[in-house]
Amino acid sequence: MTSSPKPLAQPISITANTLKVACSQCNLRELCLPLGLNEQEMHKLDDLVGTRRRVKRGTHLYRATDPFEAIYAIRSGFFKTGVIAEDGREQVTGFQMAGEIMGMDGIGTEHHTCNAVALEDSEVCPIPFAKLEDMSREIGTLQHHFHKVMSREIVREHGVMVLLGTMRAEERLAAFLLNLSQRFSSRGYAPNEFHLRMTRDEIGSYLGLKLETVSRTFSRFQEDGLVSVQQKHVRIVDPAGLKKLMSRNC
Image 1: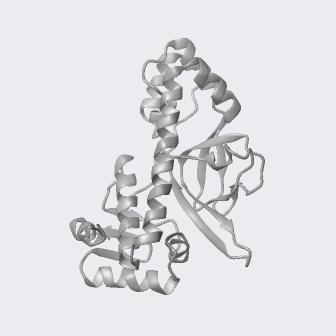
Image 2: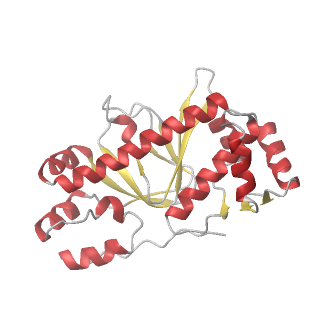
């Protein structure tokens, strides 16, 4: 079972070298440590990131209609985003893990359009967006990296639209598990064995499936030898089999 990396101790005295050493061990290094920054730019970047904020399990990082002030780099933990439908039910719109960025839903309207809730005790680094924009104009490398992050989010959202619009239930769940596997792997965790922080009901909300369908599909995957499931602990036994199941939709 994977475990969240322990947060690094806050350095007492920041220099370019000590910051680079610290960032080299952090799962946010791709965003926060663009290549080619000089010492002065490193200091500016360090000053930009606000004090780390801890978010307890079950509490909001931000709510829909809150003023948009910052994006958040997830240092440790796991979140879900969602909106409340007219009938009062929650529609889950995404899951975010350590090493990812959230909060960009508010860029266009200057207000957040969804709720963000911690699924476990988490820690984020707030990055004031207005200051990030100012600094990006000065540091082209930072702007380039931020654009890459935004592009990945757009691609991911497009993938979810395809997922919900064209796939059967078993294909949706297979795609969901393979996506989690890839994201865990890219952050240095075991790709085929992980703990689901979300409930099956939340998975169903995200995938557009009923709770019973999610549970039944998990059971079918286990019977077919594709996965091994013990409560929230999942081991992908046959990733090629899941991919083959996905290819039927191509």
